[in-house]
Length: 384
Image (cartoon, rainbow, N blue to C red; front, side):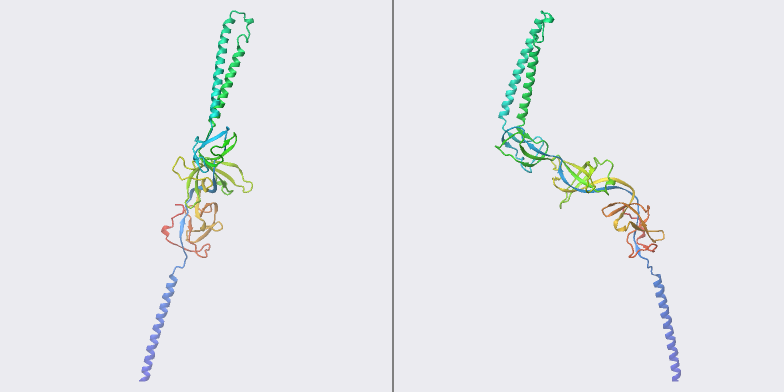
């Protein structure tokens, strides 16, 4: 009885172990099948390449300088009576505004004297013309062979006319000297220096001040060799955007006026001259752009036709990764013709609607099978 029970129990145990083994085998098979079903392809995101026309932006730096600086000198002698309150270092004066006055009394007297000489010369000429008329009437009764130019008083009239012209010239000089007793600004100006004061005696030709023209300012900017091919054929009149490099930047617009016509011998750079009107904003509410400011200047160059704009981070050794029709990685060499900011502009090596791979696997290989993340959004492009 005990042997039969033992045999029965052993049989039951064998069956239980067999069932357990079968269940384990099935579970292992299912896990294997599940593992085989996991997609291990790397996930990448792509963007469609779209050709664009791009206006090249050329950036450079320079210093704001006055269009012209004038050393002002007295043109007549005399004592300085008074000067304009704005005629101080750092003062701003308008075109034609009186800067200082030289004592005018001697020059006023010279004008009166010159006017008297003109009046005397006019009277002398009038008298000689009258005598000439009398001589002409008397000459009618005398034979023509006996009448000379001296008899007709022609030399006397010419002399009187010359004296009148001389007197008139002296009057003009006297008036000019009187006008020069009031020294005026030749243009809207910033006073850079002044070397006279009230009561000081000045002589003609003596330096009295230095003025800088604030009607216009100029910025000379260098253009590097790699930027020169992208300059327009005629840059004159091209708009330029000028921005200061301060904590609170100021932006003003100007125009390219000219280039200096030569390449720098040491740097091989070309220099453009950008002109800004009314830099100190006397005629507008724009922020003043002061002389000596260090600024960045952006100028529009040529337009690039049918190029592709790609982030620099996606270009390595002039190659980019594209995704082919079978969702496989392909490395393509490209021609980069321009770099601006964080982007490259590519002219050759890719085609419109090629899929540019953004997030690469850790070790990308040509022909590597990948999956596209959000394939419905894959047409988004940097160029839009």
